[in-house]
Image (cartoon, rainbow, N blue to C red; front, side, top):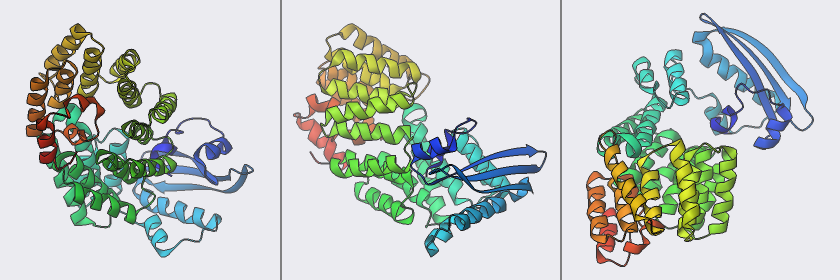
Length: 405
Protein backbone atom coordinates (compact mmCIF):
# COMPACT_ATOMS: atom_id res chain seq x y z
CA UNK A 1 0.00 0.00 0.00
CA UNK A 2 1.35 3.40 -0.98
CA UNK A 3 2.69 5.72 1.71
CA UNK A 4 0.49 8.53 0.30
CA UNK A 5 -2.73 6.63 0.91
CA UNK A 6 -1.73 5.61 4.41
CA UNK A 7 -0.32 9.00 5.40
CA UNK A 8 -3.71 10.69 5.07
CA UNK A 9 -4.66 9.02 8.38
CA UNK A 10 -1.71 10.54 10.26
CA UNK A 11 -2.81 12.33 13.40
CA UNK A 12 -6.46 11.29 13.04
CA UNK A 13 -8.42 9.25 15.54
CA UNK A 14 -9.74 6.70 13.08
CA UNK A 15 -11.08 3.22 13.74
CA UNK A 16 -8.63 0.61 12.41
CA UNK A 17 -11.46 -1.49 10.99
CA UNK A 18 -12.76 1.46 8.97
CA UNK A 19 -9.26 2.23 7.69
CA UNK A 20 -8.83 -1.37 6.59
CA UNK A 21 -12.14 -1.33 4.74
CA UNK A 22 -11.25 1.91 2.97
CA UNK A 23 -7.83 0.64 1.95
CA UNK A 24 -8.95 -2.90 1.16
CA UNK A 25 -6.38 -4.58 3.40
CA UNK A 26 -6.46 -7.49 5.86
CA UNK A 27 -4.57 -5.87 8.72
CA UNK A 28 -3.70 -2.37 9.89
CA UNK A 29 -0.63 -1.34 11.87
CA UNK A 30 -1.37 1.60 14.14
CA UNK A 31 1.37 3.34 16.03
CA UNK A 32 2.68 6.37 17.83
CA UNK A 33 6.24 7.70 17.79
CA UNK A 34 7.50 10.07 20.45
CA UNK A 35 10.92 11.70 20.24
CA UNK A 36 12.72 12.97 23.33
CA UNK A 37 16.19 14.25 22.65
CA UNK A 38 18.03 11.56 20.72
CA UNK A 39 15.63 8.86 21.93
CA UNK A 40 12.49 7.36 20.39
CA UNK A 41 9.52 5.63 22.01
CA UNK A 42 7.55 3.63 19.47
CA UNK A 43 4.24 1.95 20.30
CA UNK A 44 2.70 -0.26 17.60
CA UNK A 45 -0.38 -2.43 17.39
CA UNK A 46 -1.40 -4.80 14.60
CA UNK A 47 -5.18 -5.19 14.17
CA UNK A 48 -7.09 -7.73 12.04
CA UNK A 49 -9.70 -5.55 10.33
CA UNK A 50 -12.06 -8.47 9.68
CA UNK A 51 -13.09 -8.68 13.36
CA UNK A 52 -11.07 -5.86 14.96
CA UNK A 53 -9.00 -8.32 16.98
CA UNK A 54 -5.58 -7.48 18.38
CA UNK A 55 -2.93 -9.58 16.59
CA UNK A 56 0.22 -8.17 18.11
CA UNK A 57 1.57 -5.17 19.95
CA UNK A 58 4.96 -3.98 21.05
CA UNK A 59 6.77 -1.04 22.58
CA UNK A 60 10.26 -0.10 21.46
CA UNK A 61 12.67 2.34 23.09
CA UNK A 62 15.56 3.14 20.79
CA UNK A 63 18.09 5.79 19.96
CA UNK A 64 17.25 7.97 16.99
CA UNK A 65 20.30 6.54 15.21
CA UNK A 66 18.64 3.10 15.37
CA UNK A 67 15.55 4.11 13.37
CA UNK A 68 16.50 1.91 10.40
CA UNK A 69 17.11 -1.23 12.46
CA UNK A 70 13.87 -0.89 14.42
CA UNK A 71 11.99 -0.41 11.15
CA UNK A 72 13.43 -3.73 9.93
CA UNK A 73 12.55 -5.37 13.25
CA UNK A 74 8.91 -4.26 13.08
CA UNK A 75 8.54 -5.40 9.46
CA UNK A 76 9.96 -8.81 10.34
CA UNK A 77 7.65 -9.18 13.34
CA UNK A 78 4.59 -8.33 11.25
CA UNK A 79 5.44 -10.86 8.53
CA UNK A 80 5.89 -13.52 11.22
CA UNK A 81 2.62 -12.66 12.98
CA UNK A 82 0.66 -12.73 9.74
CA UNK A 83 2.44 -15.95 8.75
CA UNK A 84 3.24 -14.43 5.40
CA UNK A 85 4.86 -16.78 2.91
CA UNK A 86 7.34 -14.40 1.30
CA UNK A 87 9.40 -15.19 -1.76
CA UNK A 88 13.13 -14.50 -1.68
CA UNK A 89 12.60 -11.35 -3.72
CA UNK A 90 9.83 -10.14 -1.40
CA UNK A 91 12.04 -10.71 1.65
CA UNK A 92 14.85 -8.81 -0.06
CA UNK A 93 12.55 -5.87 -0.80
CA UNK A 94 11.13 -5.91 2.74
CA UNK A 95 14.53 -5.66 4.42
CA UNK A 96 16.54 -3.78 1.79
CA UNK A 97 18.11 -0.57 3.00
CA UNK A 98 19.01 2.19 0.56
CA UNK A 99 21.24 3.84 3.15
CA UNK A 100 22.64 2.95 6.57
CA UNK A 101 22.85 6.60 7.53
CA UNK A 102 19.93 7.50 9.80
CA UNK A 103 20.44 11.23 9.25
CA UNK A 104 20.32 10.79 5.46
CA UNK A 105 17.15 8.73 5.85
CA UNK A 106 15.53 11.40 8.03
CA UNK A 107 16.42 14.06 5.47
CA UNK A 108 14.85 11.93 2.74
CA UNK A 109 11.63 11.51 4.74
CA UNK A 110 11.50 15.26 5.36
CA UNK A 111 11.91 15.74 1.63
CA UNK A 112 8.87 13.58 0.97
CA UNK A 113 6.80 15.43 3.54
CA UNK A 114 7.90 18.97 2.70
CA UNK A 115 7.71 18.62 -1.08
CA UNK A 116 11.40 17.68 -1.43
CA UNK A 117 12.91 20.72 0.29
CA UNK A 118 15.23 18.54 2.37
CA UNK A 119 16.06 15.78 -0.11
CA UNK A 120 19.35 17.28 -1.23
CA UNK A 121 20.48 17.53 2.38
CA UNK A 122 20.13 13.76 2.45
CA UNK A 123 22.89 13.59 -0.15
CA UNK A 124 25.17 15.64 2.05
CA UNK A 125 24.66 13.00 4.73
CA UNK A 126 24.81 10.01 2.37
CA UNK A 127 26.28 10.75 -1.08
CA UNK A 128 25.57 7.20 -2.29
CA UNK A 129 21.89 7.31 -1.38
CA UNK A 130 20.18 6.25 -4.63
CA UNK A 131 16.64 6.82 -3.35
CA UNK A 132 17.46 10.44 -2.52
CA UNK A 133 18.80 11.04 -6.04
CA UNK A 134 15.58 9.59 -7.47
CA UNK A 135 13.61 11.91 -5.19
CA UNK A 136 15.59 14.91 -6.41
CA UNK A 137 14.89 13.95 -10.03
CA UNK A 138 11.18 13.85 -9.25
CA UNK A 139 11.38 17.21 -7.46
CA UNK A 140 12.99 18.94 -10.43
CA UNK A 141 10.42 17.42 -12.79
CA UNK A 142 7.47 18.41 -10.58
CA UNK A 143 8.60 22.02 -10.55
CA UNK A 144 9.75 22.47 -14.14
CA UNK A 145 6.63 23.50 -16.07
CA UNK A 146 4.87 25.52 -13.44
CA UNK A 147 7.76 27.50 -11.96
CA UNK A 148 11.40 26.81 -12.86
CA UNK A 149 11.34 26.05 -16.58
CA UNK A 150 12.39 22.86 -18.39
CA UNK A 151 15.73 24.11 -19.71
CA UNK A 152 16.88 24.78 -16.15
CA UNK A 153 15.23 21.94 -14.27
CA UNK A 154 15.11 18.91 -16.53
CA UNK A 155 18.85 18.40 -17.23
CA UNK A 156 19.29 18.40 -13.43
CA UNK A 157 16.46 15.88 -13.12
CA UNK A 158 18.11 13.60 -15.68
CA UNK A 159 21.52 13.86 -14.01
CA UNK A 160 19.97 12.90 -10.65
CA UNK A 161 18.02 9.96 -12.14
CA UNK A 162 21.11 8.62 -13.91
CA UNK A 163 23.15 8.98 -10.71
CA UNK A 164 20.52 6.98 -8.83
CA UNK A 165 20.79 4.22 -11.44
CA UNK A 166 24.56 4.32 -11.31
CA UNK A 167 24.37 3.63 -7.58
CA UNK A 168 21.58 1.04 -7.79
CA UNK A 169 20.17 -0.07 -11.15
CA UNK A 170 17.64 -2.30 -9.36
CA UNK A 171 15.82 0.69 -7.85
CA UNK A 172 12.33 1.00 -9.32
CA UNK A 173 12.06 4.65 -8.26
CA UNK A 174 15.17 5.52 -10.29
CA UNK A 175 13.87 3.87 -13.47
CA UNK A 176 10.52 5.61 -13.05
CA UNK A 177 12.26 8.96 -12.47
CA UNK A 178 14.32 8.53 -15.64
CA UNK A 179 11.21 7.46 -17.53
CA UNK A 180 9.37 10.67 -16.69
CA UNK A 181 12.38 12.74 -17.81
CA UNK A 182 12.46 10.86 -21.11
CA UNK A 183 8.72 11.53 -21.50
CA UNK A 184 8.65 15.16 -20.44
CA UNK A 185 11.91 16.51 -21.86
CA UNK A 186 13.71 14.13 -24.21
CA UNK A 187 10.54 12.91 -25.98
CA UNK A 188 12.31 9.57 -26.31
CA UNK A 189 9.15 7.53 -26.49
CA UNK A 190 10.56 3.99 -27.03
CA UNK A 191 13.11 4.31 -24.23
CA UNK A 192 10.47 5.84 -21.98
CA UNK A 193 8.38 2.69 -22.17
CA UNK A 194 11.43 0.53 -21.47
CA UNK A 195 12.18 2.45 -18.28
CA UNK A 196 8.62 2.31 -16.96
CA UNK A 197 8.32 -1.40 -17.71
CA UNK A 198 11.61 -2.02 -15.91
CA UNK A 199 10.40 -0.04 -12.88
CA UNK A 200 7.24 -2.16 -12.69
CA UNK A 201 9.22 -5.36 -13.23
CA UNK A 202 11.41 -4.45 -10.24
CA UNK A 203 8.47 -3.47 -8.03
CA UNK A 204 5.02 -4.31 -9.31
CA UNK A 205 3.51 -2.59 -6.25
CA UNK A 206 5.10 0.80 -6.99
CA UNK A 207 1.99 2.87 -7.73
CA UNK A 208 3.89 5.86 -9.12
CA UNK A 209 5.48 3.71 -11.84
CA UNK A 210 2.03 2.53 -12.94
CA UNK A 211 0.77 6.12 -12.83
CA UNK A 212 3.67 7.43 -14.94
CA UNK A 213 3.39 4.53 -17.39
CA UNK A 214 -0.35 5.12 -17.75
CA UNK A 215 0.31 8.81 -18.40
CA UNK A 216 2.84 7.93 -21.11
CA UNK A 217 0.43 5.45 -22.73
CA UNK A 218 -2.28 8.11 -22.87
CA UNK A 219 0.11 10.56 -24.58
CA UNK A 220 0.85 8.10 -27.39
CA UNK A 221 -2.85 7.32 -27.84
CA UNK A 222 -2.95 3.82 -26.32
CA UNK A 223 -5.95 4.63 -24.19
CA UNK A 224 -7.10 1.14 -23.18
CA UNK A 225 -3.60 0.32 -21.95
CA UNK A 226 -3.37 3.70 -20.22
CA UNK A 227 -6.64 3.18 -18.36
CA UNK A 228 -5.52 -0.30 -17.29
CA UNK A 229 -2.25 1.04 -15.82
CA UNK A 230 -3.92 3.99 -14.14
CA UNK A 231 -6.51 1.70 -12.57
CA UNK A 232 -3.64 -0.38 -11.22
CA UNK A 233 -2.06 2.77 -9.77
CA UNK A 234 -5.43 3.62 -8.24
CA UNK A 235 -5.72 0.11 -6.77
CA UNK A 236 -2.26 0.38 -5.17
CA UNK A 237 -2.76 3.96 -4.00
CA UNK A 238 -6.53 4.53 -3.78
CA UNK A 239 -6.23 8.02 -2.30
CA UNK A 240 -3.64 9.34 -4.75
CA UNK A 241 -5.19 12.51 -6.11
CA UNK A 242 -2.78 12.51 -9.04
CA UNK A 243 -3.50 8.92 -10.11
CA UNK A 244 -7.25 9.45 -9.77
CA UNK A 245 -7.05 12.70 -11.73
CA UNK A 246 -4.94 11.12 -14.47
CA UNK A 247 -7.43 8.27 -14.80
CA UNK A 248 -10.19 10.81 -15.37
CA UNK A 249 -8.14 12.61 -18.00
CA UNK A 250 -7.37 9.31 -19.76
CA UNK A 251 -11.12 8.72 -20.05
CA UNK A 252 -11.48 12.23 -21.48
CA UNK A 253 -8.73 11.72 -24.04
CA UNK A 254 -10.39 8.45 -25.05
CA UNK A 255 -13.64 10.40 -25.62
CA UNK A 256 -15.30 8.50 -22.78
CA UNK A 257 -16.67 11.72 -21.36
CA UNK A 258 -19.29 10.39 -18.96
CA UNK A 259 -16.71 8.15 -17.30
CA UNK A 260 -14.28 11.06 -17.16
CA UNK A 261 -16.82 13.31 -15.46
CA UNK A 262 -17.73 10.58 -12.97
CA UNK A 263 -14.10 9.82 -12.11
CA UNK A 264 -13.04 13.46 -11.79
CA UNK A 265 -16.09 14.33 -9.68
CA UNK A 266 -15.20 11.50 -7.29
CA UNK A 267 -11.63 12.80 -7.12
CA UNK A 268 -12.86 16.29 -6.27
CA UNK A 269 -14.96 14.76 -3.48
CA UNK A 270 -11.74 13.30 -2.02
CA UNK A 271 -10.19 16.78 -1.79
CA UNK A 272 -12.22 19.73 -3.12
CA UNK A 273 -9.21 22.05 -2.75
CA UNK A 274 -6.85 20.21 -5.11
CA UNK A 275 -6.46 21.98 -8.44
CA UNK A 276 -5.79 19.06 -10.78
CA UNK A 277 -9.20 17.31 -10.99
CA UNK A 278 -10.95 20.68 -11.36
CA UNK A 279 -8.63 21.45 -14.28
CA UNK A 280 -9.14 18.11 -16.00
CA UNK A 281 -12.90 18.32 -15.45
CA UNK A 282 -12.80 21.74 -17.08
CA UNK A 283 -11.01 20.22 -20.08
CA UNK A 284 -13.62 17.48 -20.26
CA UNK A 285 -16.51 19.96 -20.24
CA UNK A 286 -14.73 22.06 -22.87
CA UNK A 287 -14.27 19.01 -25.12
CA UNK A 288 -18.04 18.52 -24.85
CA UNK A 289 -18.75 22.14 -25.79
CA UNK A 290 -19.99 22.88 -22.26
CA UNK A 291 -18.02 26.11 -22.00
CA UNK A 292 -19.79 27.70 -19.04
CA UNK A 293 -19.17 24.62 -16.90
CA UNK A 294 -15.58 24.42 -18.17
CA UNK A 295 -14.95 28.04 -17.17
CA UNK A 296 -16.49 27.46 -13.74
CA UNK A 297 -14.24 24.45 -13.02
CA UNK A 298 -11.10 26.16 -14.31
CA UNK A 299 -11.89 29.22 -12.22
CA UNK A 300 -12.11 26.96 -9.17
CA UNK A 301 -8.77 25.37 -10.06
CA UNK A 302 -7.22 28.84 -10.33
CA UNK A 303 -8.33 29.62 -6.78
CA UNK A 304 -6.27 26.70 -5.49
CA UNK A 305 -3.17 27.03 -7.71
CA UNK A 306 -2.79 29.96 -10.05
CA UNK A 307 -0.36 28.23 -12.43
CA UNK A 308 0.14 28.84 -16.13
CA UNK A 309 -1.43 25.52 -17.15
CA UNK A 310 -4.74 26.56 -15.60
CA UNK A 311 -4.52 30.12 -16.93
CA UNK A 312 -3.93 28.97 -20.51
CA UNK A 313 -6.87 26.58 -20.31
CA UNK A 314 -9.12 29.26 -18.84
CA UNK A 315 -8.16 31.76 -21.53
CA UNK A 316 -8.88 29.21 -24.25
CA UNK A 317 -12.27 28.39 -22.71
CA UNK A 318 -13.17 32.09 -22.57
CA UNK A 319 -12.16 32.48 -26.21
CA UNK A 320 -14.19 29.50 -27.39
CA UNK A 321 -17.21 30.75 -25.45
CA UNK A 322 -16.98 34.03 -27.40
CA UNK A 323 -15.68 36.11 -24.50
CA UNK A 324 -12.60 37.59 -26.18
CA UNK A 325 -12.26 40.35 -23.60
CA UNK A 326 -11.68 37.85 -20.78
CA UNK A 327 -9.41 35.78 -23.03
CA UNK A 328 -7.24 38.84 -23.61
CA UNK A 329 -7.17 39.51 -19.86
CA UNK A 330 -5.77 36.01 -19.38
CA UNK A 331 -3.06 36.70 -21.97
CA UNK A 332 -2.16 39.86 -20.06
CA UNK A 333 -2.06 37.86 -16.82
CA UNK A 334 0.22 35.24 -18.36
CA UNK A 335 2.53 37.98 -19.58
CA UNK A 336 2.69 39.50 -16.10
CA UNK A 337 3.19 36.07 -14.55
CA UNK A 338 6.12 35.39 -16.89
CA UNK A 339 8.06 38.24 -15.29
CA UNK A 340 8.23 36.23 -12.04
CA UNK A 341 8.03 32.57 -13.07
CA UNK A 342 8.40 30.40 -16.12
CA UNK A 343 5.33 30.41 -18.34
CA UNK A 344 5.05 27.66 -20.88
CA UNK A 345 4.58 29.05 -24.41
CA UNK A 346 2.16 26.17 -24.87
CA UNK A 347 -0.26 27.84 -22.44
CA UNK A 348 -0.18 31.04 -24.49
CA UNK A 349 -0.59 29.08 -27.73
CA UNK A 350 -3.78 27.56 -26.33
CA UNK A 351 -5.39 30.97 -25.87
CA UNK A 352 -4.48 32.07 -29.39
CA UNK A 353 -5.82 28.76 -30.75
CA UNK A 354 -9.11 29.43 -28.96
CA UNK A 355 -9.22 32.92 -30.44
CA UNK A 356 -8.72 31.49 -33.93
CA UNK A 357 -5.33 33.24 -34.28
CA UNK A 358 -3.64 30.23 -35.88
CA UNK A 359 -0.42 31.93 -36.95
CA UNK A 360 0.16 33.28 -33.45
CA UNK A 361 -0.73 29.88 -31.97
CA UNK A 362 1.92 28.19 -34.13
CA UNK A 363 4.48 30.88 -33.27
CA UNK A 364 4.02 30.10 -29.60
CA UNK A 365 4.08 26.35 -30.22
CA UNK A 366 7.43 26.84 -31.93
CA UNK A 367 8.64 28.65 -28.83
CA UNK A 368 7.35 25.73 -26.77
CA UNK A 369 9.45 23.42 -28.94
CA UNK A 370 12.49 25.60 -28.36
CA UNK A 371 11.91 25.49 -24.60
CA UNK A 372 11.31 21.72 -24.76
CA UNK A 373 8.19 22.26 -22.70
CA UNK A 374 6.63 19.05 -21.41
CA UNK A 375 3.19 20.15 -22.57
CA UNK A 376 4.25 19.87 -26.21
CA UNK A 377 4.46 16.11 -25.74
CA UNK A 378 0.69 16.15 -25.27
CA UNK A 379 -0.16 17.36 -28.78
CA UNK A 380 -1.09 13.98 -30.24
CA UNK A 381 -4.04 13.65 -27.85
CA UNK A 382 -4.72 17.17 -26.55
CA UNK A 383 -8.26 17.98 -27.69
CA UNK A 384 -7.67 21.66 -26.99
CA UNK A 385 -5.57 21.81 -30.17
CA UNK A 386 -8.06 20.07 -32.44
CA UNK A 387 -8.67 23.29 -34.39
CA UNK A 388 -5.01 23.29 -35.49
CA UNK A 389 -4.75 19.65 -36.59
CA UNK A 390 -5.70 20.12 -40.28
CA UNK A 391 -2.82 22.58 -40.73
CA UNK A 392 0.36 20.97 -42.23
CA UNK A 393 2.43 22.80 -39.61
CA UNK A 394 0.79 20.68 -36.93
CA UNK A 395 1.84 17.39 -38.52
CA UNK A 396 5.37 18.67 -38.95
CA UNK A 397 5.54 19.72 -35.31
CA UNK A 398 4.31 16.30 -34.20
CA UNK A 399 6.99 14.67 -36.33
CA UNK A 400 9.71 16.71 -34.62
CA UNK A 401 8.36 15.73 -31.22
CA UNK A 402 8.58 12.10 -32.31
CA UNK A 403 4.86 11.46 -32.60
CA UNK A 404 2.57 10.65 -35.50
CA UNK A 405 -1.01 11.70 -36.19
